Length: 164
Image (cartoon, rainbow, N blue to C red):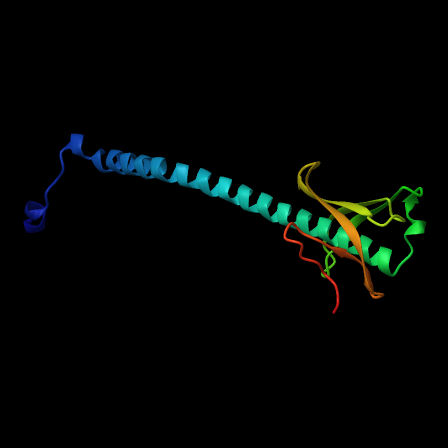
């Protein structure tokens, strides 16, 4: 009997208060967390698109390098096209690990003239069938100084690649 006197019993109207208070706190925390989750989702999409854009740019640059190598050392006449324009498409280009990175489309205009123009497009799949595409255009100039490098790349500041 003595233990029964020391216990305090709650009134019937106070018994659901803790549950209602917990639901209010959880709703408040959920309202704080939802915008953060959407922000993380958008940042992840932007990061993925930035990565795909960089991969497409790298593929386009690789296409330019392939064309320069073919002009210097290879045989561009087996590419599709005619005397004024040659094209090469490399589909499903793979990285060293075997993963497919994307496609490269290379176009060399005036390949047998003194200033060939190379346009290379790198395409990487992004969402569904929509690719991220980057284009690199280079006008080559014959260096004439060393037989190893018949053509070189010049930038806005007249920076050339070659051997000395």
